[in-house]
Length: 221
Image (cartoon, rainbow, N blue to C red):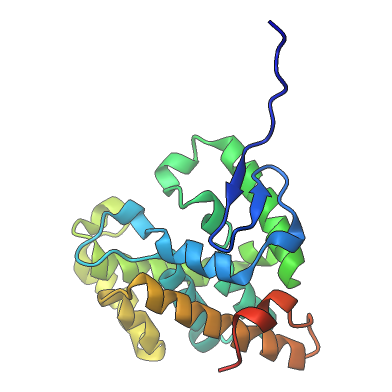
């Protein structure tokens, strides 16, 4: 029996685009697919209290922290909004599992490069120090509001975590929305609006041009 060639598996997005998991076409990456995909992915594998908290909501909190707490430049804030965009296509793999999946990290890098190329963001910006800081700050607020046993997530006690979280909530009111997570459709709408606003700010600051996919998907706030 002749051995068949193994083809890279494809995925079909919300908008109907078909992409090769190992070699995604940059021109087929669309903002609405990212917003929709992230709104369906659950942080903490969905193992949280109350309403499920999605990755699109998380991304908006990271954007807010970068903008209001860390006072990052527009390009970095935009990178923060898209720092988990690969998960719209690949899913959200929890950190304890990801360390055992080196090939997943390589595939994630392929998608980061493609998404960065589509939207004019350097792939390294997704992992910059400010973005990592904002991501961890958002994570702290998420643990405070959404999980029962904070020690399992790296914090000594809920009271100690409260001291970390309060300054974030004071400066970034959006972070308090984590306590009552948004449903998927609201997260999509907010993500599209934020992306529109961010790309217009970057363009006005002399950065990357507004992508065609953004002009179609969302209007400025």
